[in-house]
Length: 474
Image 1: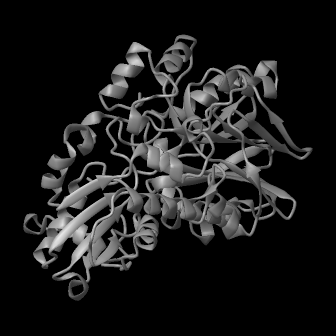
Image 2 (image 1 turned 90 degrees about the horizontal axis):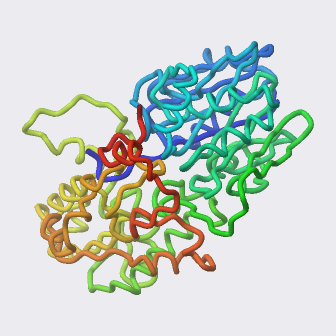
């Protein structure tokens, strides 16, 4: 299993553009880092929604022929998925599309609902029939159930019943594109404009690829409705000054060229590295990352410490998601396929490895062993965030404590387990300080570090499922 958390999901939407499907395709390409299990695009055509989705990467699921069948002067939404709720199967790929009383609706969701079991049980008791094991489907059931009260009231009624993390894009067969964020603002979602056409995307890097103008990030709890009449916003939740943006977006998830939660990701990660060098200096010949995740914090550490930065391991960028599996005698083959050390640079040296996180520890252990075998003298590891000791229930795939190596081992035990001369994690105080945010304790969710969950999951059934690793799937 990978030594990194899996990304959340990526969502994209565009209103009334003559090349809506093709632009959505490129938007998903920019968001591919957020999910590699499945991809899908839904478009409005002649008053109903057509869609195509499949398992695999965006470039595997779509080609020119498929895009040609979706193209036209329509609105569109798209999704790339990593499953935190529901199995990794085609039926759970998004956008999820339903037909209701002659109209169609499609939804793409990034996040996780912590009250999914409660809502599903209530809906089933009222006669709802579920087609998937995704919590995303719950939103659509709640929405269409209340359409008799009007479109906006149906949106408000649905989102005010949800608990947890969600950034949602909704497509209607009338061509409206709707963006929705939970009141805590866990997951990013931004608004852009491309030649007068409005765009929604999980990250600004998708806007950059399309040369779209960044307008703003959606506010926590905001519903943005994009229609032929323009853009209007609804705020159905009670106002709160407390925000709990997922801090791990800045540490690992988001692309470094994106700006999220008002912060440039590249510069944030360099600042984490500089703070790490202040807190945990050590003598060494060079500073290096395990590419690509540790690159930017390593740059910051090297600048602050004055120790040269080197790319001591080279990543093979052409390794796909699948390849011929090695024999048992080559059990570390998949790890070595991705990264290979520069032997002449590293042999006989004392090195500092910068990483952004250690989740399960398996891959890091294998890589450190390889460095020892080629003759590295001392290996110091510095992590640009605090230890992950508590599970996440808001859309990251470590849903049980058993998956987190730092939850069961002390620092000295981790040093021995990984084969290090020294190990240091950035302090939580240092991490918050390096964000540059005023009063950061009221700005970020830090539950995986400090066990302070901003949204409770106190229903007995939901809590039991979460603790057993089911993470809200049905």
